[in-house]
Length: 227
Image (tube, rainbow, N blue to C red; front, side, top):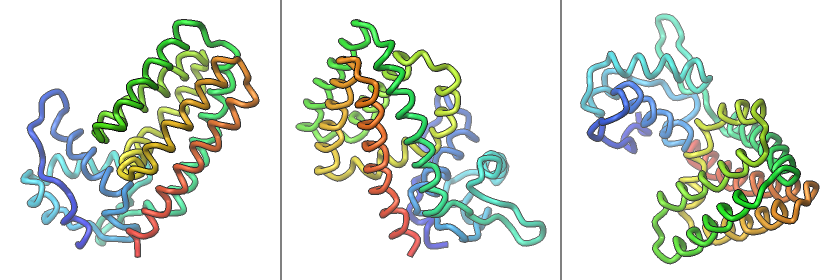
């Protein structure tokens, strides 16, 4: 299984259960394309590589199967089902949901939320100098969370939470490139300005364009990893 070589050993587990930790590792390997669509997973080999028993791995795989990232075939084994086509669907779903959330945020945002968005953008700009990708991702996610809060869209936010299995890994993939980091901050600044100016049409369009552009970048990486 060529893709398994790219998995990391299990790190010390503090707040997460072992199953959740293993789930995160395998999920990220699948969504990033390191474990390829159609690939059969050798559970014993994978558990050995991670330094665990097969029990937490089997539990993690059941969760991944419920999410549509793997499938279990009786007497044949478990196969990765995530591929570029599924990644594209997830990206389009996120673009639709996030753009509607941004639209509503532009209608409902308050001054405190505008100030928090702007403060996060200052931190993002500073983060471009340190090139701490994980910190930039954390700031990115906090920025989107402020927009979600400002929107007041409980139902859309619940729908969006189903995209979290894809979003973090996609950001890690895309923001590893310097040009993409600068583009992402510029796009976030434009989105924040549209929301602060209470321009829902513009906020919706800018958010959709941002999600699709960065998502297409991730699609290229998934496609390349699958070849």
